[in-house]
Amino acid sequence: MTCDLEPATPGRLFRVGKGPDPWAFLDWAQAGEDGTFGNRWDDPKSSYRVLYACSQRVGALIETLLVAEQGFRCCLRRRGAVPR
Image (cartoon, rainbow, N blue to C red; front, side, top):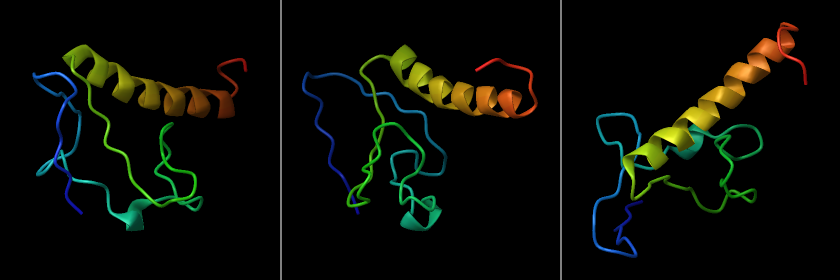
């Protein structure tokens, strides 16, 4: 599946993604048991995939770090290091 992106306002779009093609959708084979990829805007019915992008570089970084922080906190909670 390809996606032609047109920002609402002219300018750059920033995205944190994996090479070699950071704008490629993840393969459905990488979806979890619930049919999502574990992100907050994923389609709960698994009919479409989402690409995260932002008009500001810091926005793209923050979105990525928020996901990483949630995983990190979850891991610490399992070890009893962070209160719920």
